[in-house]
Length: 466
Image 1 (tube, rainbow, N blue to C red):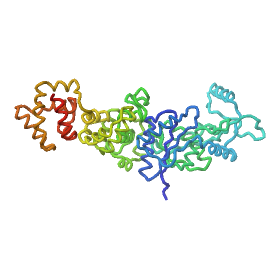
Image 2 (spheres, rainbow, N blue to C red):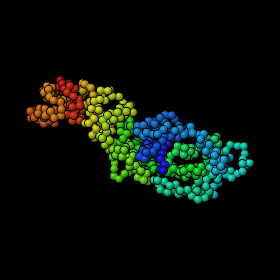
Image 3 (tube, rainbow, N blue to C red):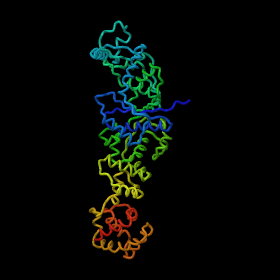
Image 4 (cartoon, helix red, strand yellow):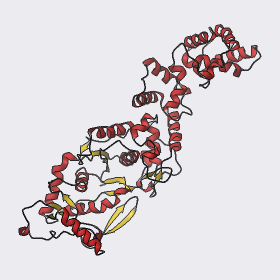
């Protein structure tokens, strides 16, 4: 019987959900969802000095925006501290760990001497095999007994087999002198207790795997499948940082990127399925596998992100797009739409979605439906409303009062009006755009008239004709 897949995302709540973390969460989510498994969320909040509730909330909001739903409750690592300590004490009782009474000064002196003599500076505690009766009544840490010979093989689904000599592993501290567990112990215990089968995380954790395997092996626990994924670099080839621009998932929401486009782009950032660039969530879940992840760092490219997002906006359901745009306005701190504006926006989606790469692009095109009378033309549009143009609008408006309000009839009426004056429709289109939208660049005149409806369209033409 195959063991059900269980993955997890385990961020530290010290800031926002950055793009690298978002991609790790996405890969873990895709792998679990595509196999009918579970995707769990654990907040690694053991560092109480750096942890903030606001950062935890930012992570949860970033996950929610990206649509990365998790199974079960959010797990707090800090709350599991008694269980972590219990495991350390079990290893101590079984002789697989020991009490080390060395002071920080003694450890520093050992390392200084080892460095001077050209030896390894990995600390070798004199307390490793000391008899209990020699133990002083003094503070101590609990250290695991690292293997002294041989090698540890990290079987990694992305990096391949990584071999580390056991002489490179130190007797890692499990419990500090105040009895609190260290992060490395907490991660292993939590992953085991949560039933995690696949650990997908950044390759900056690769060296940690060998040290964590000491705990798995000492406890007789199954080691999960490791998958250490390359970090994300900027266009300059350097590790992605603040100098490359927005980093937090919520910043991208506030910039107007659709979540589906962000998921698509992040999935392609270091993973591929043939030459497919644009795909749905269902396809990503079906296709995603660990062997499609590249070993080399991926480069974040804002133009590629915009292109993918534009395709997702064009393909999106109109009602869903309306809902996401309303959430974007809130995230960006912009005024909310009225119900009438939102209804009009949804009605106009069919002529707004093409070639919009972000929501601000779409809303710019939607100005004609969001604006209220009287329409105030901008400087470019105003140039199309000279006396001759206004005269044409004055003459045209009554002729449109009784025509059937559909595209074919409107095209026939407007083209006929232009032909009767021995001019081209293009000469009429500028004044119509200015009157209907107050802009020189808009969706087609016919689309605007259909979306606005007869009464509103004629009212705007009358306003401009005066």
